[in-house]
Image (tube, rainbow, N blue to C red; front, side, top):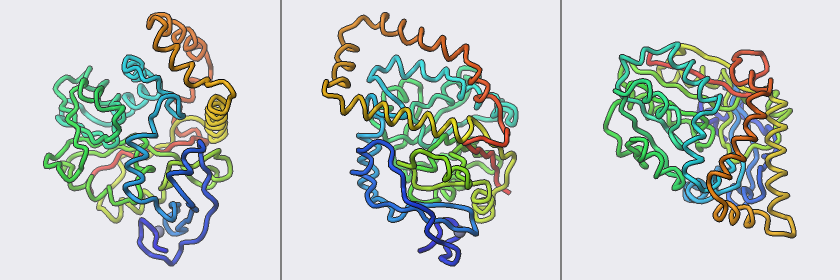
Length: 321
Ligand SMILES: [Zn+2]
């Protein structure tokens, strides 16, 4: 079996079993095991799920209401407010520290979700033109409203971009060739920013689940990618919470969802029904009230401290060599 970065079978060995998140994931991502290339410090799923199955998963299941990790409510107003989370402010501070946005005209978000970061950047830098690729039907309306031009097929893209951003998307792809597309779609002096889970050894010792991720990156894996595609780091950093905290929240979310779903009462349906009939302002008030707790939590510092020595995400800002 070939490594998905160096393409050599020489240093590839079995790493571990694949850990599924919610039960339904097993219907889509069948029989996966994880293999690792020691040369690239890179782990990947095998066998890879077929493309049509992955498309179906992301278009129709991944962001269904109440499924972790998003716990969507089906209400577009909730989605819009989600952009004001600490993690996005960390991205804004990081990007504006390294890049001069007065010189950036176009931003392309690969796997944009609701396109929060581009939307927030445009609030401050209204001259920015926003582009993205996002096929999830739950995101289309909000991306459109936020002024994104959404290319659902990357082969249709003819523009070149000054900044390509990708938040927690690369790990969902079934190979690493997206960097070839990024390089071609980037202006010569442009930059690419990405963040993905940090899957060094400690990840595999602590994590609660892998699905639906298929590629598991480390700093060394990205160094190899830079070599292959003629890119270099402007910055490489570790970010977000500890591995232990991440595993715990992921486990709590998974168990919470399974409990709701398996309850003798149709709790998920009742929840969705209540959301429909209760006044929106009341629901919003309840939600804001629960957020007050987290605003006053010291846990929040983890959203703003990079390179602590125990961060579960990694990010790179790269540019052509
Ligand atoms: Zn390799």
